[in-house]
Length: 337
Image (tube, rainbow, N blue to C red; front, side, top):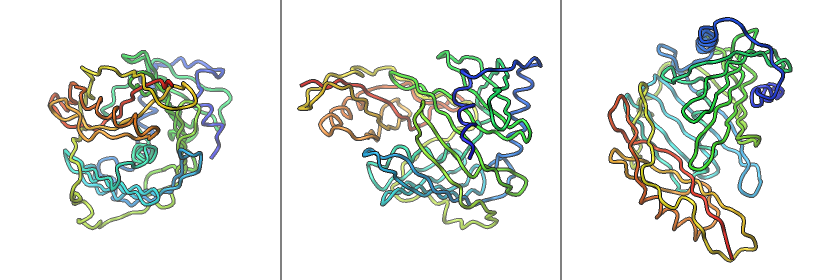
């Protein structure tokens, strides 16, 4: 993988640019649609496939943590994903309007939960993308053409960079709004290989701001013309969640008191602590299945989970109808002796 491409994508705003003078929205939409035709292996009517990948991320003790990912896809309403890290496993099974999620441990590593989104490289057609400019980063290798969106409600922009020769999506950067801060997520796609009528990347790297999060290597992508129907049966004990392919509105917190907490611990410093929690917002706007994703301080975690359980949300909706949705939130605290 040529990581000079990653720099061109992730820090596109800092590089010298050449202006693009054609009709921006029309050109940007054409670039994105061409990239979809080239690489969207999950498009309607695409052949069933089996995808296997290895990945790694940096653990809490700065060690390299390896994992494996397997996906069997028959259609957008019938798929199964398994992510394994050491002895921990996450299973996801998709249906027409719902999907089911089962973690066999309460502390499944948060970085590994990103695998499905990393390997679904193109934005949904239902995403509301309005482009304001197209630029050519002059230091990009290979040459790229980058489309930049207009600011969203949070005054944030996304960037999509395409290979000028082939038209594949080489990388993207998009902001992620969290409770209390915003981070830039960047993804770099490389080593494209042929699969049927498609070209799909075999190497993917994800970064959060300037910090590497995940490296992914696709080791197999093959046709699966007759997948075992039993694969698509929801596993016992799985959590049932909603799926939306049209007008999705994510949950919005309406009552989230004390999101910045002082906490007295017997530590050697007063450094701030941020805890990331996963929860399901049900159709009533209440948090369910609240758990800490990045353990740091056991005493703090218990009180924080209790705090978040008292929050309330405007639930997610699909075409105006409430549906249960999993989200991540962050709670901040400073530690004092």
